[in-house]
Image (cartoon, rainbow, N blue to C red; front, side, top):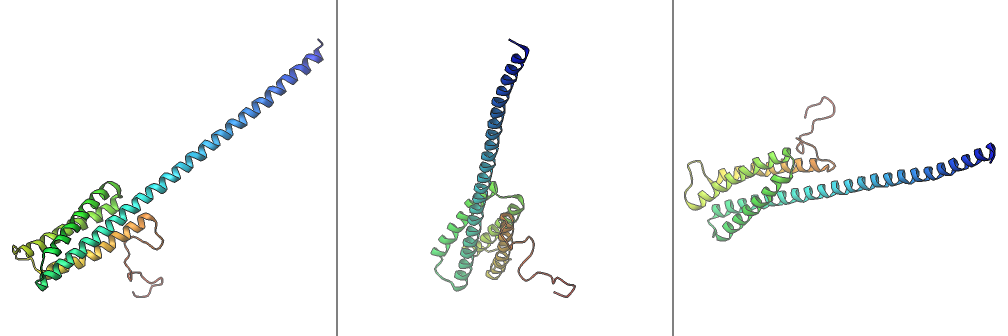
Length: 193
């Protein structure tokens, strides 16, 4: 075989190998790209799932706190009117138990900033519950009164709005902003509030 023939043969072999290698490398790059895209999609699904679980936890915590506060309010009204207390006591006990369970779950799921607010609120709910029960049982402390319980309940409703606002901010709800109550916005210019 001549040198020219060998050169042509070598060029054909190298060309064929190059074509095969190029196709193999292209396929491998496409596989890696698909794998990265699948991983990104899985991460997005997981983030969406995590946000959904957090939202469900927040809804449960908000609902349980509202029910607890409503039951405490009913207890105060019943105490003021001298109503039959059995049904009111039962509702309050159920609301307290539900809140305890939902709060326990929240302790393991929610970010610290929300948990700190929810913890303060839970502690205060327990304190108000104790005061209301002492009054109901005829074992009230000197500072215990129906009026004092109602005042603390009013404060708790405001605190619940703060907790809810923080939860909405954590979820990225449009219009939710930390530390700002309705009506507390400052004017854009230097005018008075």
